[in-house]
Image (tube, rainbow, N blue to C red; front, side, top):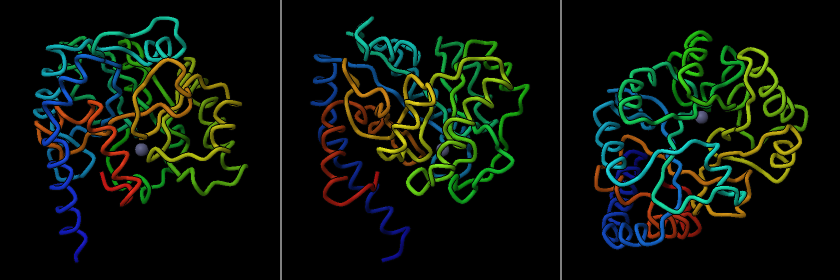
Length: 271
Ligand SMILES: [Zn+2]
């Protein structure tokens, strides 16, 4: 079976799973809400898997804003540490990889009063394009400064986007610790959060992240963000081009999270 046919079948399977339990999931979520972190990458009209168009982003976020409030990663941290629990529907927006195309979403995000966290590479000139699976333009330093100035939160997405599963301890230090120091020095901010490239980590990676002084680290795990949650494995819901609007609406309620977790255990990471 060709890869694209297999990919298409998996997308249809995912659509069936999400949409079959959509209404039940949304009722469940409204009865027992928790904060959700949505992970986007680029804003593009082309066919790149991890991108979404501006029109789709607007549709998704405008719908979310009709019943949920936007929160920041600082709010998520206060929630998991029990300082300020989030008890109503709430969502945070993340952008991984640091592509300049996310600038096109700024007017929309401003209008909806959403302050995203964007995770950039500290050494983009040495970025692993094989791991990124894309070759888009990165944000420039002055664009990053301007986003910070407008209230967006800067996070680390490592130094070069290498796969954290196969790193030596020397390289872990470079990708985790040195990226934090480099971004803090260059942009004069405290970098409190890191997003794992492709969401991948090991126990050793968690140790390095804690030792480097990050408050939280973002994965692509399926889970509900609650008080007492391990701050170094915060779950996120990845949104990409293959999600239809009905799927998006059903992608973060408990039904989708538990089903995705089950399917990943049985047939692997297909979503
Ligand atoms: Zn990435």
